[in-house]
Image 1 (cartoon, rainbow, N blue to C red):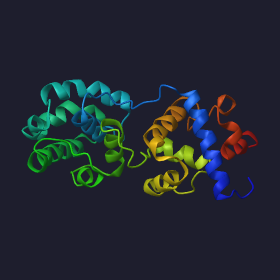
Image 2: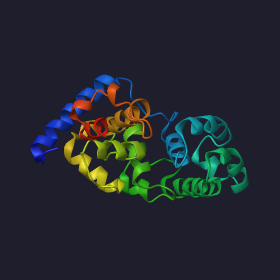
Image 3: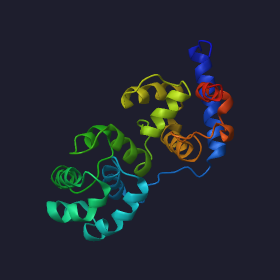
Image 4: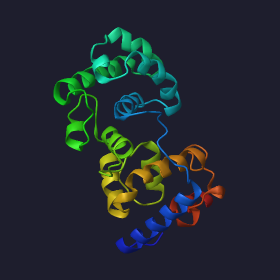
Length: 220
C-alpha cells in the first residue's frame, strides 16, 4: 500500500467505521451486568478468559456478593471457589477482594466514574477502566483495546503499535470521541464473526476494500 497521508487515513477510518456500524448494528458489551459494580467485577474476571465463561460464573458470584460491601467481607477461598473456571483464579480473587475493600474504604461502596479513581483500584488497569466508563457510565474517555481490537487495527494499518495503550492513542486520533466505546464493540464483533485470527474470512469482510491486510492475505 502506498504511503498514506494523515488526512487520507482519517477519511479511510471514517469509511471503515460506517461499514462496521452497518455490518454489526447490535454490537454491544458482551459481559452481562446490571450495574457498574457487576461490570467492574466481570471485566476483572474476563482477563485471559472468554466473555461466555465469565457470564456463566457471575450469576452465582453476584448472588453471593451482590455489592462491594458484601464482596469485601468475603474470603479468598470462597471467592476462588466461585470463579475457579475463569482461570488465574487465585490472583483474580485477591484482586476482587482488594478492589471491593477499596471501594468501601475510599468511595463508600460506590464505583467511581473517573479514569484516575478507577485505575487506583487494585486489579484495575486502563483497559478495565475504559470498559466500565464506556459501558456503565456512558463516558468515552478512551478506547478499550483487547486482542481483537489490536490485531484488527494493525491489519487495517490504523496503527503499527503492539502496546495496547499506544494502539489506543493511535485510534483515538482517528475516530470521533462519541464513537470510542462503540468502536471497540464493532472491532470485537468483527474479530469474532469474520476477521478470525486463525481463519480470517476475507471474502465475507465488509471492509476488505479498505484493508491492506486483507489484500496481502488474498495474494499470499
